[in-house]
Image 1 (tube, helix red, strand yellow):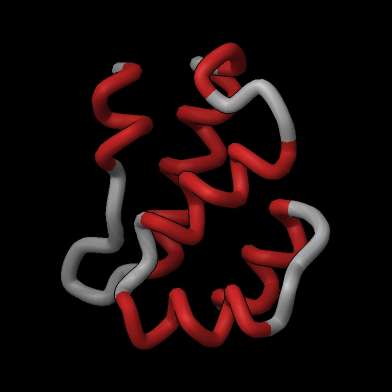
Image 2 (image 1 turned 90 degrees about the vertical axis):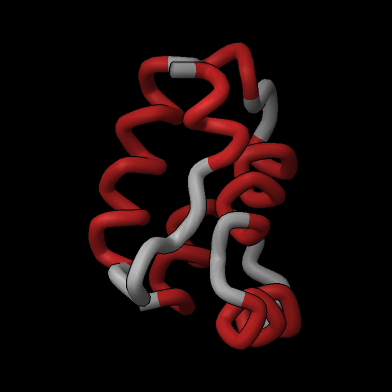
Length: 71
């Protein structure tokens, strides 16, 4: 499960499924992303490059902000 958390990425442009699974794994593996910065790093890293750039440029402060920008 921890490997899935580290390697999770968007499949077939299904952002909603990615967001839901990421949130589930963040709850199940809380020690793998010990702070909000790391959590957002993992989340943004799993996005397609075209979206990753937009989210990063928006400089979200929380995971929720990053998710809202993504969707």
